[in-house]
Image: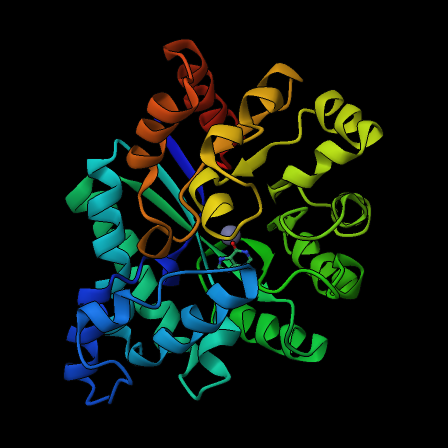
Length: 307
Ligand code: HPA
Ligand code: ZN
């Protein structure tokens, strides 16, 4: 049993599907072909990735597009051995370019149903606040999700981290928790340990997405260990976004040794060079993680899931 707890469904948009959806929706792309598109998958930091990630979303227009996107991910996740997938989507990335929220939710919900029926993956959706967009927009879109009775299990926080602290989003997270939703947030990816503290204390999150910069703060590490707060770590993403120098130097073994409840995830697999099975293989081959360590990671993923 394996759970994937940190994957952005828009980050599973493979280049081939970008071209297929562009044709279906008559969207003109600025890349001539797959090779030209792939040549852009070289990132220097989080923002350089986000620029391409948001640009490629222009091909996603209808419920059918969102269903096709999420079904392709769930099919691939099943092959990777994933039995439970809690995936993020970015409502504001679509509403802000005129796509009705109902189309997004309808398509993703259809894929969740197909995931169980066709691929044997128990999937669930977490709506994520795009933190570098206006705070009032996050609150409005959250209200719309409630009015639509969107089948979400939680609220997340993603996109450009530095300069957009969790403290900005206290109100919307308080509303989400009052609605009985789970709360998670990206923190300590590029941002400082202070943002992890804020996510815990001001947003009331149950898991931290990434969180690897927590290692800079021993008091924070002690708190995370003590309360066994899960960290959804994404090693291939960390390398591609230059949060760590190389996979060989990834702090994952240190995090396990410290007693942190760490899980391994793919983040944006279409952009970062692999799905969760590829990630586990790379951790074995390039970081020397033992069978026992990999079993612990899988066990942690089930313990940290909201199932
Ligand atoms: N970090 C922040 N926001 C994101 C990411 C990420 O790795 N992927 C998609 N949105
Ligand atoms: Zn992420």
